[in-house]
Image 1 (cartoon, rainbow, N blue to C red):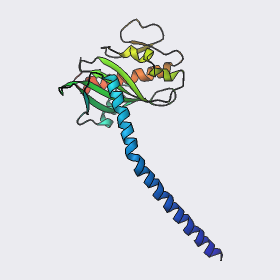
Image 2 (image 1 turned 30 degrees about the horizontal axis):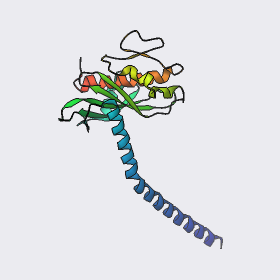
Image 3 (image 1 turned 90 degrees about the vertical axis):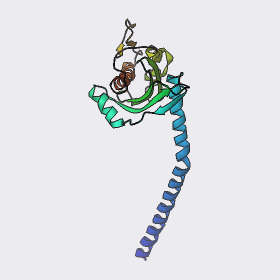
Image 4 (image 1 turned 180 degrees about the vertical axis):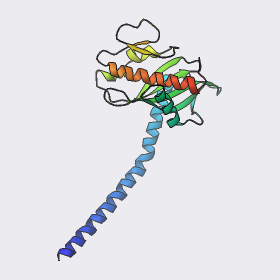
Length: 203
């Protein structure tokens, strides 16, 4: 009797596992496309936020995420270059790039954002797509008062300072959130590094 009960219980458990696996697979198939569509829409919104003059965006042909990331890491940045989009005007001409970066040196976690860079190297700004910094502190990297400091700047690199900026390339840190401020600034610098070395942006 004991053996029969074990077999019986095993069969029930197996059936339960199969049904659960089927249901999970079904849920995944149902939600996969809506999730992908939502992610794509969020990405397009971020691209447009940093390149309002662009009529469309096209993925950079031949882009290699691993090679791009290795390049910026070799330059001293703890970041990954996740994606590069070519910004195009209404006539189809290239007017710059949107480079998506994940900064890995945030105070709480990684910060992913898209950086708009014009063909001459001028930074349009950035738009955050994923962040988990401290509310009221690190989350302020999403505030215009901080991100506007990068807009319209043509510099080699940006530096974070604690006082009022005295030069075009200086970014005033968010009070109490210097780590988050530096993480985003380093990410923008990583995007500029990749732009100059791989996208014809050498100055």
